[in-house]
Length: 244
Length: 193
Image (cartoon, rainbow over all chains, first blue to last red; front, top):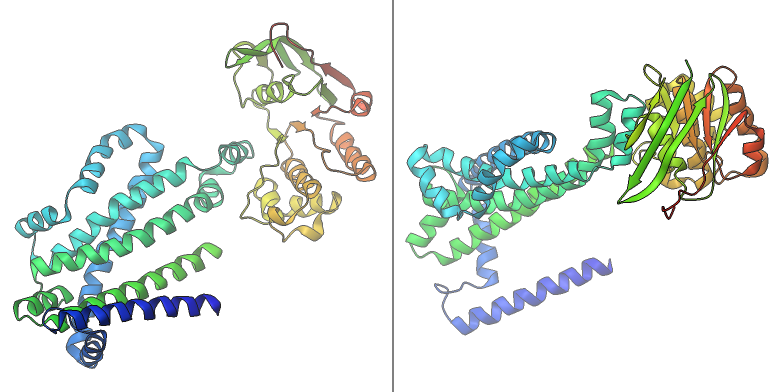
């Protein structure tokens, strides 16, 4: 209760700061007020277009995220077992991590259809994080427990499910949470540059073109709210799987 | 076939822990591996179990043997219940039997973090006994057990040792006195263990 009250007070404080900045700017075009933004968001949320665009963006980003989780987990697990594979893939993973996302978006625009660009970019953002976390989780698995599992002849399946999986799960969960936020941001940025037909990115781009700053803020708020909702859904889903 | 330890030497970071240790384990009965702390008892037990390689010397006669062990630390899976921990090694029927015998059946559904030190030790012992095997290695299995319980548990181990060799690591002179044979490790000259 106390925690919620503190959160609410902090939120209220920053909304007041936003309101003050808006009054100082004196123009909705430069900086719309919180009230204008949330009103516009409610207006948009009442339209089918809003939900269609949000769902299409969500579908693209979640697709890239899931592919990245799958590839990162499989490659991370394989690399933890085979040092040669780890050494072979590490430079590529490090290159992906340190290259600006804008470079990849522009390259992807040349390589693939515009609908696939946000999927590809989300995938690229997620892959190195999951790779790193899964590799680390496997490396941190208790050697004593592995020795015990070998002595008592657990076999591969039981060793993976009973020894490795519980050790890797916290790293996997942390990786998924971090990667999801990044996939959202990079995926929407990719949409802004690739402009798929139905997307939040296109709406953000249009708002910029037509100087609809309130729309820009409202769509950005929608991205933040969807990101929080998705993260909460993911965390509770993974925790439910983990507790079984 | 007896297990023969021949001139086993082992060093860690330049410190000699075992120096040309030789011994023969009988086909059955309890062999007490004793000596002061840090003398290399656990190291020798791990070499017998094939978990570590000696720097020189060899252990013969363990080929084809199924080894069961209570490790120095309990090594229970933290996310699994006591029953799961034991059943993963020895199957559910044997697990329930040994949990009952070692008076820990009430804690079968608990996770290791919920257990006392003595209960964890019994769970680890139940796992080793449920697994069975043709050589049982027990590293301080009575740690945390009260004298009455220790007596009952040692009875089960003696029963087990009737037709199989059991290597029992212990500081307790009573355990050495009760064993069929004793390997007493002494300080290695030049080593600080």
